[in-house]
Amino acid sequence: LCDTCPKAYHLVCIDPDLEEPPEGRWSCPTCEASGIPQKEDEEEKAVKTNMEYCRILILKDVGWLLCCDTCPSSYHAYCLNPPLTEVPEGEWSCPRCLCPEPKNRPEKVLSWRWVELEYPPPMTEEEQKELESPENTGRRIALKPPKKMEPRKERELFVKWKYMSYWHCEWVNEMLLDVHFPQYLRMYWRRMDPETPPEVDDGSQEDPDTGVIEGKDRESDPHNLEERFYRYGVKPEWMQVHRIINHVQYGKTQFDYLVKWRELVYEQATWERDDFEIIGYEEAIMKYWQHRERMNGDIIPKHIAKKIAAKRAADGIDEEEENKKKKKRDVKFDIRKKYEEQPDFTNETGGKLHDYQLEGINWLRHCWSQGTDAILADEMGLGKTIQSMVFLYSLVKEGHTKGPFLVAAPLSTLINWEREAEFWCPDFYVVTYVGDKDSRTVIRLISFSILSRH
Image (cartoon, rainbow, N blue to C red; front, side, top):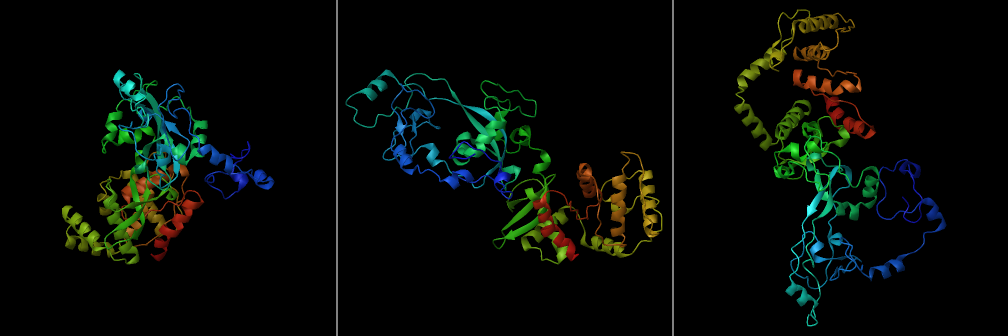
């Protein structure tokens, strides 16, 4: 939207490479060509005069306003959040002027709600007389309303910030977006009903008049993810660590890690501190360093190596037994020999193959040994994905090939392929090459660079 004339443009019509609207005031090409009218003098004059009524409670007959010394806004002291308990001395700036700018832009607003704010109790007759007394030569600012007032409602928006994970979504007052991202907020209210909040996804009851949501008091519990995130449209998988794909060291034992989140594209990977406390994060860090050691020969940091050793000890893993198993795996298995029972490397996953699945795997192995192309033509739901993955896993485990393998699958089944590969082939490093241009660039720069060294 042009801030100089009534015209509006699509971003792509202005600049095909423009992904976000420009910050601050923006004038369209027509206005820039004809010359933008200068309004600086008028704006300076406007700043010198404060509003004659409260910005929140628009009642012109209620005085005793607190005027901002930075902008034209005026407020009642009891309309602020929280209300003032004493009259400020010297210069005073309103909440809009003191509103801190967020570190990142909002990526999307997941939901919004009404919140009720109570007014202080009304002034007594004595307090009102003292305020109106001619002997009162100080600033006449009312800290309490002249009469009892019903609670007012303000909007809070649940914001997902750009370049930050869903774990960092938070409720913010509408004023923050109105001050720092007015155009984004304006576009949001064009799409959404500004009077009726969207329904929550867990079926809980919400009062449409007050905005009170059943179970909202449990949102303060850091472990109650249902109340904090899921009910507002955040999928549990989006908050689960899929893998670590890169790191940055900025201290002797301090790291930031680039986290790929489950069921989200690589473009939405986010940097997180190494002390970020979420389930599966520490385990993902240990797997990341073990993978780098195995593929690139990187040295595992000492504090990570200690955690790996402690975990192996807690799991009861004997180093000697592991070395024996490794030597046993180094011995090539005759691929022409048929599996009569489920191989050991699949037993370690905890999964159980059906007899017909084992027969399918044997047939695939036979075709591979003969250099013959093959098609699994089982009916839907009989585990063709599992048979395919276990077949590829057997080739690596028995030393017939080191890979890599390329699997082409429909977009609708990619998540299922990832899930089955993670369960049945725990030693595979699975990279899903999918997403937009930025996501594919991240994959090539980070994940493929490791594979190419293999």
